[in-house]
Image 1 (spheres, rainbow, N blue to C red):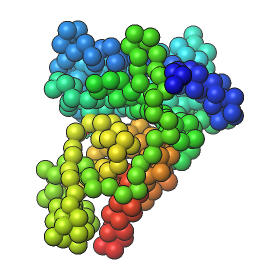
Image 2: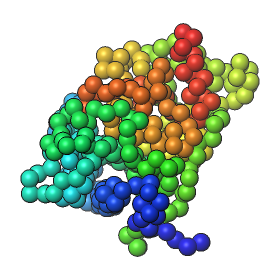
Image 3: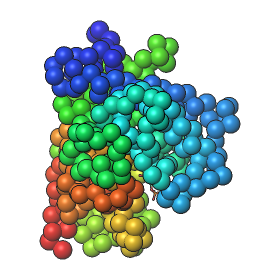
Image 4: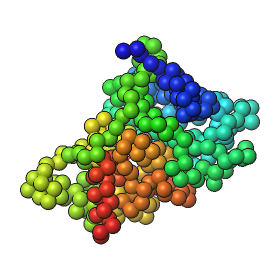
Length: 333
Ligand code: FBP
């Protein structure tokens, strides 16, 4: 089979009118940054990049050295790129304007530079998640308000998975496509066309150590699966939890499943655990584009009206029939 690179794929998308030249070039800049992050992640202790950075991020979480390195790599690459009006990062409190010395573009980029930070020092897969929005017409100096657009207005979303191989998973609104980094060529090769999430599954992912804090609908849903054949579901289920959202979602894109980080008594005050703008929204767009579903338990994630840049939301996503079932349990509650 002829090997197609990410560049060739994106040019084909542009020729078919499914993306603009600027969006294509923006995605290429993000892909280049991902390659540089992949090199740092894979070097680990050899490059002295493991462990704490000695600083906290806007969420009050201790930053890992790789959180800071990945954040800097993405910011430097994209502020120079010329396709953005502004950026927002999990690691930075306010939006990041494009410095005056660089040309500006019509897009807004939001990202979680290194997802799954708790797994970095134990050599388990981590990732980068990104979301692309249009900057409102006529706005040259966007403020936080311009970024607060519902997820359904994303023009592109993707994630990189730094695992045994480095992969880039992408949607520009025409299905979900996967690329694998060929380290010798230094190029992403098109390896997973039109990824789809099976509508049914026997696998669920949730941090079960929070069970005592869950709301009744989630307790009901999970206990029915744990009862397996002997319970109302009449079949057995298996559980997986990597604690890197990117790795858990990638497994679901590859073989199905349902991922849950629901609201519970532990995270209710902050509205949830995962961040809407650069974790939930991009993953929800990808999962929906792959035929799956994504809700907060009560609302479609892509319809949530954002109110703050770093707001958190409950997340339930994956195989459509399971997401619809647990969402129905919330409605029945
Ligand atoms: P960050 O690492 O970007 O802060 O992401 C949050 C996250 O690590 C997700 O990737 C993952 O799904 C979740 O938190 C794990 O939570 P927990 O530690 O409760 O299992």
